[in-house]
Image (cartoon, rainbow, N blue to C red; front, side):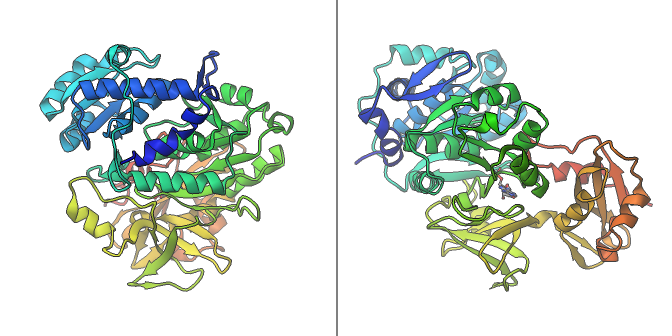
Length: 504
Ligand code: AMP
């Protein structure tokens, strides 16, 4: 039996081992053959450390080519790769380790002392280390271990990875991702976005998240594209890499930060063919500004940890700002309210079905049953619309919906009205407990510094566009919105910061 995912991802390493897989700003170059051999050595080390088929290998390490080999090596060894955000504290790591009980946990050597205790308490197995430069006890074990000759057989429904959802409220849930879900989606994206071995992808996303790990890395591996492999977002490095590169995958903050740099010009983008954005909403304004500056229309897509990518704007055809495009080939999508599909243009909860969808939440059958219907439809929790042309627009998360005085307020509608005002850079609209209305609408506004803004000024400026119940009862000014590394605004943090705003 073959190894469903690895056989496909590393097919190019066998046919063209000398082809370049990645280069880094410090001049390092790694061929496809070297990538595969390093992964096979790590797989050998993991087997020696006791990893059996289906075992979890939890990993909290900095981004490096060796960390990518660790992902491939884990799946090659028949294991389940479980990457953790490097920002997680030891207490958070302890939760993930006790929940997933990995047989191996790989961490940075600098954190080994503290995290070994955490791993022991959590009942995790061996602790190995890997640093940002690719050194550590795992790397040592890999140099002495016999490289795995052939990947451990795994079929399409076996698990390849568990990724914990960012979970702003409640316990984080481990999304179980099968070989089938990962491979089918990466193949779809490669074809839809036309990736080939002529591409050079600027890879600046973290590899503990679905975007950088599966969308960027798997698409590059499958298509034969080479990567400029960066540790993270770095405007200098990205701008330097652009001449000669063909594509960039980013979160919206990549694009706003690059726009703030005068070195971003049409000339610099001369060899680029595709800019992709996702993981958080791209402001229509950023889309327009990017096109004016570079001549390229950003292609926005929509996905999530549980489903991989669901929709994408077209490669050829109209990439509409503010929308996330059409369902990808093989992905079904519907918008539901009160148990039925809504009319075109009406708001409801987005549901998706297809080979891309996950297999359930790790050891949480009741959560799985709440969100994954028996007939395969996954209830995403995102609110959206589907217009008559088939474009999907995300309106927000269902849990961010504000219900004020019994009326539904969709934050995005209010945010868009506020964002258009002169002097406003961006805004986030939340609901917080209100003694009369249940929830009161609160707008958190970031000024752009060009005008003096006041609370009354903002409310009166949008009063003609929005019904009274949608208008903010309070406007708070902040220098910046709280965001996580994927560029998502942390609305739960804002709700907790302003929870007492309407207390008597
Ligand atoms: P994650 O599981 O961390 O990838 O987060 C997935 C969530 O990010 C989705 O459920 C959406 O709420 C949001 N998201 C992803 N892509 C987009 C997009 N292009 N526009 C708006 N929200 C997005």
